[in-house]
Structure formats: structure tokens, C-alpha cells
Length: 163
Ligand SMILES: [Zn+2]
Image 1 (cartoon, rainbow, N blue to C red):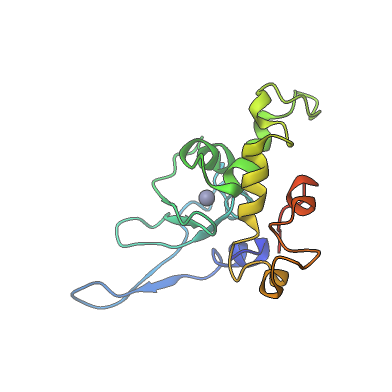
Image 2 (cartoon, rainbow, N blue to C red; image 1 turned 60 degrees about the vertical axis):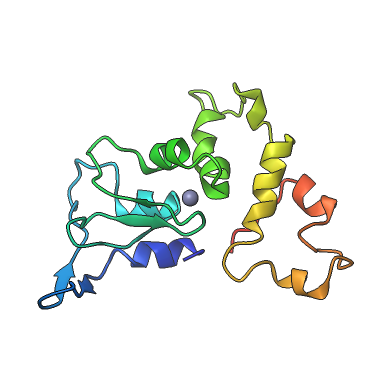
């Protein structure tokens, strides 16, 4: 689920869930109307894929920090909610947090100086994106590899892993 398209596709089909007792039931994404900011597209962009539970048909899970969220209200913005609730999730910090770095003309102004890309915290967040899923493929070749994720030039150069 590291890839946007896979997360988006997870909303397209009903999911079959087998309760402890009784027959399996099919659950589909319930908010298919324009009143909700939480759409399959906005949720996938915010790092979430569809993972309904019995009693929680709009449950989603972050591919990186594994946090599950449900009971979306019409005004809930997935980018903002993920950023507020998961302050140590690299995807929430790096992608969702961009909302707080720009002015009304979408220019980067970084009103919160701790969010400047060269800060140690954001450097650590970028490094952690290399550990997602199967990890960064060059890490298997050891620290000496020129593109090992631990090498300073990778994380300090504002790169993060986006498979
Ligand atoms: Zn997360």
C-alpha cells in the first residue's frame, strides 16, 4: 500500500468480513457523495487505504504508521486529520504537513521554523520513509553503498522514498 494507486483502488471494491458468529458480510465505502472532504482520492493522498471493520464501514489505515481512523465527518480533511493525530508518522509530517508550510498563494513560507526541511526532525522523518514496506533496496548492500539510506547525502538532500 506504499503506492497511491493501490491505496486508491482499495476503496473500489466491497470488502467481505466474517464476524465471530454468522455469515460474512460485504462492506463498501459509505461516503459516496460530494458533501465529504474524505474521498477515496483525498484519503489515498493522505496515506490511507480502505480497511472496513464491522460497525465501522469508513475505517481506513495509514500504510506507514498503521494508525486506523473511522467515523469521518463531512468537514474532516484527511490531510489535516492525519497530521493532527499522527505527529510522528513520516507521511503525516512530510506530505500532510505541507498544508502548514505555505501561504494563501501556495508559496513555501514555513511559519513554523521546526518544519524547515533542513531541521533534524524532518531529516529523521525523511530517513524513516526509506524503511517503509520492503525497505530501500540498496540498504541490503551495506552501509558503504553510495545510496544507502543512512548516508547523509540521501536524507540531507531533501529526498524521501516515494515508491
Ligand atoms: Zn501515518
